[in-house]
Length: 476
Image (cartoon, rainbow, N blue to C red; front, top):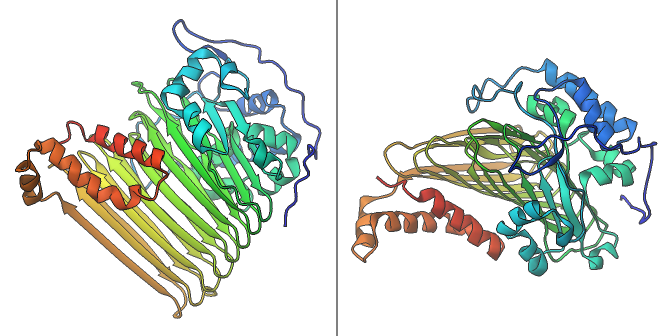
């Protein structure tokens, strides 16, 4: 059991925050208090750590991750990455805004961006706490007093490194997502900035969701937010994450990292709607470690982004742990959505379900799944179901399942379907007065409805609206 004192925790002397020495901005753009030159080296990693006033142990983690990154080759599988020029990316951009606890204190141009996204309105009515990140910095963060009084910690990740050093140091990119996992996990470990830290004490059941929204606004930029959530024994929480970026001609990179720890008998619901712009490579890493009788629920919506590789993983390491994964992916013209889920059954009587729905409307959707039942995970069960809907002649869909069962006392079922919208369905709906595009949208809405229903109302409406917008012009 992990206990967190309500006073600040420090384990190493942090270097004091020093104001950055250069200000770069262009007329008509949001002003930045710091914008790094393109490219990555140890000097930039040290500068990121210096500006954030981090303790020495975090700088050591960053530099070790950089060494791993430089030594690993680019992935030779999955989506093509030839359009991603890592040498020209800007890895650290700080807007001219500190962290605020009132929306009125956020600079007007940044606040207007989040108002258009509906974040302040959602916070007033539906949320326990809200965080908002703009490029490399969190510009707004607030936790409702009711939960703070029960020992809940909800902070931006930079602050948590300084104020909850013991807890962060034990969990940050150690056993869940180590930098050695793959090249982009190592890159994240070197240049991560901002993100969310949540700790729910034992037995506390937070009844309203937490939300974080990440906005990547810099041209040819990279965003590397880190999410670390620890739900202690018997506790419960829901976390909602949204992401977006404006469209530029040059490529951008999103390589965030999500580490979830679900303790004995705890429950965490993690909801994510990612709508990066079409010039973005979305190479995100998400993983949960689930202890005895713990439950993790993944609900994911992936739209936007030109190339996506994302496979949330659940490691069921405690007996009777459970994972449920629901996902929607939409691939429009020029897009490749390579998404799926991974489940590792590492303890007896664990259970999991994976349900994925993809829509290819001029693009390519890929489901890539992995189920592994370890030798000691007796009497475990997993069911995988992936359904793909193909719209139009220039659309593709593929499924790559991997199932490894190392004991005979467990069960795995996999089911996959791929189909096109039938002419009879469209004809019937058009005979009722709908246009062909309206009829196609109606069929798509019915296809995704079982997963849409699982989302909180306001996010279900948002995801449905985004899918309708992506469908515009996709018929014919």
